[in-house]
Length: 109
Image (cartoon, rainbow, N blue to C red; front, side):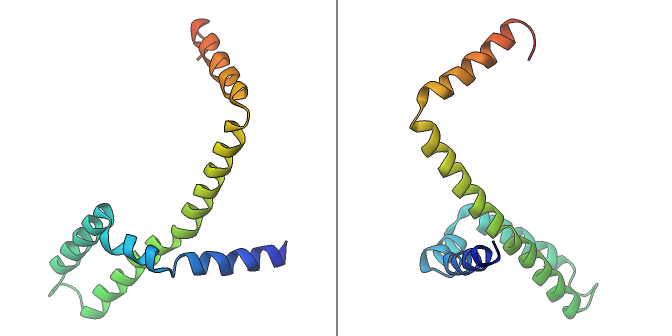
C-alpha cells in the first residue's frame, strides 16, 4: 500500500502541474470570482494589520484551496468508476430507483 500511495502522490502532483490544470485555475469563473473576493477582503485589511499578516492570510487561503485539490480529484475518479460500473449493469440502477419509489409510496422515505 505504501508504494501505491507514493505512486498516486506522484500522479496527483503531475496532474496539478499540467498546463490544462493551470488554465482551469486561471480561467474558471468561480475560481476567479473567489480570488477577487479574497483580494477585496484582504485589501480592506490594509492599514489595519501588517502586510506580513495579509500575505500570511493569503497564503493560508491558497493553502486551504490547494488542500482540496487531491480529495476532489480522487472523488472525481471514484464517481467516474461508479458511472462505469453502473453503466455496465443498468438494471441494478433501475432496481435501486424502484426500491426508493416503493419506499416513498409506502411512506418510508
